[in-house]
Image (tube, rainbow, N blue to C red):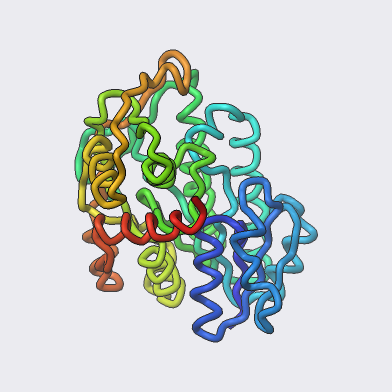
Length: 321
């Protein structure tokens, strides 16, 4: 098969490209390197079945040609990380909405199946746990910049389903819950690479708030395998799926676990949210996916637990310290 991956030089996209190439597929990556990195795909250049196109997914003419030549499409191009969204809300909103419109339009024109990645941020401030795909959403106020990302991704979902209902475009939406693993940057506020690097450098591990907020982390290899399985299943078209782990940990517990696994003398330093994100920052206390639907669809079960994930990331980061 010939696959197009938008945002393929990003953390998840580059792992997805590797996985597809290992299965002997042909892969074209479209990326403008606004948040992705050439380092993520440098090892793929020269592969006979790999092509890199440097460009913007919002360029509709360029996107049409790439979609036309693909069999299936993964749309991953997006803004990433809370810090980027807080610092550049206009860019976040415009890039997400315009990029999705461009890729969906091209896929509809040429009848190409497309899987698009959304986010657990879509559940907003809901306390109805675990988060289920068909529950109502509770997004924060529009003057709180952090919700720009969630609202933009939800609009992507609405647009995707509009193409499904109106034009029967074979499309799949997935909401990702804290995908982590080797090569993830801490540049945009990603917690695990940030804490691991601090531990390996024997610096204080910075935990925002009191560290009682809970999260679930899923290894990027588990996520990529799931994305590939889903796009191969016609029964998944027109549906929304959570993808992640339901193994919860507090952020404080995560920091302590990293210190122990890295055998670091570091200690934890608590940092007020306001110091990092400014006044009035909203956070979600818990974020747990209901995985019933994805389990029923493909028998999904994460193969990495949290200790294995952290050991993998620590091993990768040690090479760069």
